[in-house]
Amino acid sequence: MRIQILILASALAATGAHAADWRDFSLKTSAGALGEFSATANWAYDHNGFGHLGQGVDAAAFDDDSAWRRREVGVAFKRKDVYELTVQRDLEAETWMDVSVKLISKGLFGRDLGALRVGQFKTPVGFDAVGASRNTPFLESALPAQATYAGRRLGVEWSLQRPAYLASVAWFNGNDLEGGNAGSTLAGRAAWVPRNAKGDVLHLGLTASRERPDSESLRLRARPEVGLTGVRLVDTGTLAGVDTVQRTGLEGLWIRGPWSVQGELLQVHADRAAGLQDVSGNGGYVFGSWVVTGESRGYNGYAGNVVPSATSALELLVRYSRLDLDDGAVRGGRQSDWTLGANWYLGRNFKVQANYVFAHARRGGTLRDPEAFGLRAQVQF
Image 1: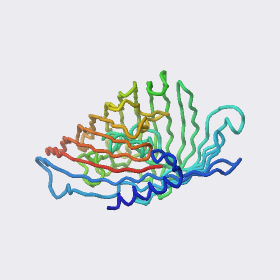
Image 2: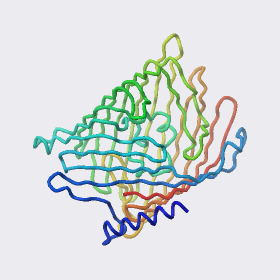
Image 3: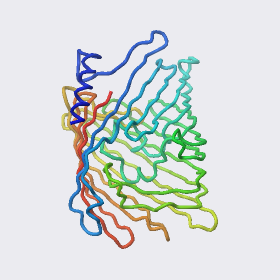
Image 4: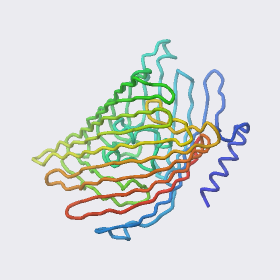
């Protein structure tokens, strides 16, 4: 019932904001020469169901559930090519998201030397995890993206984007706004984009980071690509004595009309002190997408949602992902998933997603191969 109320309220807001076209609404107002003020939101309500639990799984551990997955709200104040102020919070997770100021050299100095961002934002390793949550093609990030993603931190970043390439370097120091992720991290991202037009994209990128965690600990794990469960089929447990953590990724995206292919190879390596064994985890994923109604996936450094050319658009997807967290005496397990997906876009603001996940995990001597169904209703502006 709550999701119907949310959608109805959003539709009414849309009518007041842009009555001319309910399929594309936003809440914006002009501040004259100072720029533009806008309110943003991304609310997603999920249902997860589990079946064919197979061997080695406690059935009670996988409870069917329906709940809010995200209730993100935010405000932004920007002046084109000069500055952007962003404040976002997830009311469901009770955490701050991006809280930052971006200064754009083109508007400030008359020459495009890139942009400087200060505040809290995502660390860049993980093409699948670092893009905006409203644009996720599947309900959850792929297994290796979950395990390697370092979250948001307080820091400073310089970035430069050109039609044929992009680059960024960031330094994070301290912690996040919740008091977690304490330590320092140096990170960078670079990509070559030899084809960059609407419906015709080729993106090849490299990301890397080096972290010194104050906690001197690390835990690598992943959910089975649905979000309303606390079960992790692969999990290293807490690794103590960690001096540094290196994360690296190779990312690729190809879009050609209604077809697209995206993939990553990701690795995380923990250097440990006091004679403790160093630990590595690695994995990858690849997925294909076909927009049945003929539109293309969006792109602006990261892949975006499909924008219907008429009232709605339908996208079909299939993904394979794998994650290996076994390394010497650390037996975190190995898992591979196949996921079938369908996305229905109603204008720019509404999206319905359905996923069916076939998981296969082995940890120690135990095999677990549950299947999971996920359904999401999402409204965003």
